[in-house]
Amino acid sequence: MLAVGSTAPDFSATLDDGTPFKLSEFRGKQNVVLYFYPKDFTPGCTKEACSFRDSYGEIAAYDAIIFGVSGDDTSSHARFRETHRLPFPLIPDPDKAIIKLYEAKGTFGLMTARATYVIDKMGVIRAAIRHDFRVGEHVPEVLAALEAFQPKAAAAAPEPPR
Image (cartoon, rainbow, N blue to C red; front, side, top):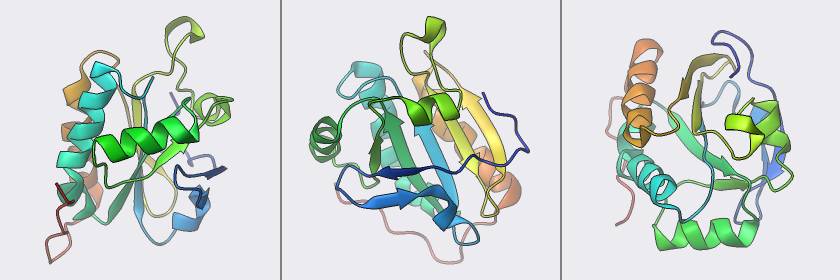
């Protein structure tokens, strides 16, 4: 995993809806929660995605935006996002370039690790979280990391549609 306190590597990608994405465009604007997961529609990955979905408003209250990354392709991500009503974008990484850049390769390099980075508005990694099997640990640790450096916004963030 990348070290806490280091600058998050910049990258460009295309989101599941076809929108261009560049991580550095969020510098000075929003905190970023970048989470990596092995595969769309698997039980653990579905549970994790739904956990981020269910905590979307609470995370957004820290002026943070969520992006999920896996090696699945755009069509799989679009179906996964729609099926589970995820209010945040997914980043397809079929060549695993972003996964490699963020040192999110799983055991023996066979799968993507279940890893989450909390990146502040200046592009600094404030938390690096990895729990390959304890799926439910990511969101509480993300919230604790955000609380440590970013006060909640005065108005509550909107909840995602259900």
